[in-house]
Amino acid sequence: MSEEIINRVANSKLLTFDLEEIYPKGERVSFDISQWLMEGIVLRESEFREKAKEQDWSQYQDKYVALFCSTDAIVPGWAYLLLSLHLAPYARKVTVGSLDELESILFAELLQNLDVSKYTDKSVIIKGCAHKPIPQNAYVLLAQKLQPVTKSIMYGEACSSVPLFKRK
Image 1: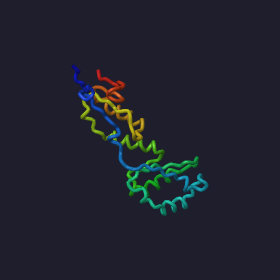
Image 2: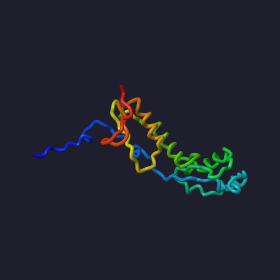
Image 3: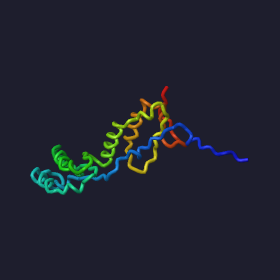
Image 4: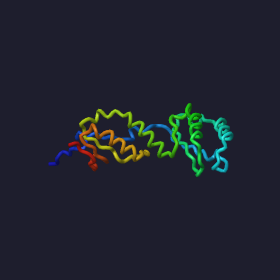
C-alpha cells in the first residue's frame, strides 16, 4: 500500500514575499553627460544649455533615466538639474547615478509606501532567487519593513529557507 504524498509546503501558513511581483515595469536607460562636455571633461554652460534645448527628449517617454558622467569631469550640480527638468515631461523617473542606484531608489520608494498589514503575526519567507535585477538594498529594506509586524522572517524558498528573525 502506498501512502499519499502530502505537500507540507503548500499546506503551511507561510507567506512568500517575492520582490519580482512589485518590480516596476518600464525600460531603464542611462544618459552619459560626458558626451556634451568639451573633450569629455569641461562643461561650457552656453554649449551645454544649447544641446539640452536641441535634444529630442521624447525618446525617453515612460522610461526610467539614470544621469551620470563617465569621465572624471567636475560637473556642476545645476547641469543634472537642468537635464532632469527637460526629462520631467517624458520620463517616469530621473535620478543621478548608475542603473543599479536607479533600481535601488525605485525599490526604496516602493517599499516605503508598501502596506504590510497582511503580514501581521505571520511567518514570511522573502523569496531569494530573482530573474530581474532586484538590488540587495531592496531585500534589506523589505526585511526592516516586515520585522515590526511579522512573527518570523526567513529568506530563500519554502523548501530551503534561512531563518532570519523570530519574535519572542
